[in-house]
Length: 124
Image: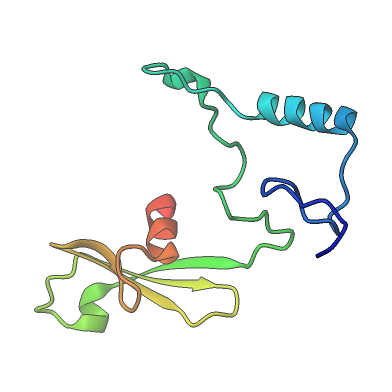
């Protein structure tokens, strides 16, 4: 048997340095202030983030975006029911073709959630 006292289950392992208690209390106070409190029925206490959407970064050099409106009957034929057609070029990417018909606006390859569809909405 060893002569060392048994370690409690909730104690940190011996290789983890312990912080002095004054640092712990400062850390706990700052954390509690930074978190908004949520009370039942009071949604004004929760702050929404400002700036770009969560997970996005500001772009220092945004890519050049061109939105070009095309004639749908010239490109798709006279009998086409497509009401609008746009070619959107974002930086060096391949161009996106955005269609508008009875289903709404959508990108040819990426669908409704494509960034090019949002750019066409902003341009019109």
